[in-house]
Image (cartoon, rainbow, N blue to C red; front, side, top):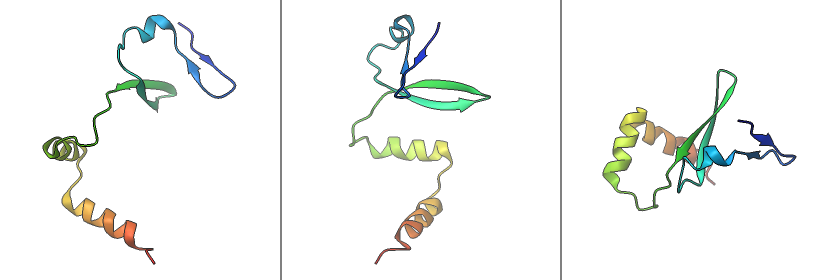
Length: 79
């Protein structure tokens, strides 16, 4: 199936593909081996539980030291 790229750099996806993703409004877009890969994203509320956030950080390999360093980096140019 073809997807059309509009003049505003938007893709129009075929209806037959979209109907496979009921309730999904957002897709994560990535480029892999010269291809555009779309993955459905389910939005979570801002108050997602802390345990879920910790599990995601662990899965991504983010350590407490990484957080400390990121905060230090973000604050380095505060006036």
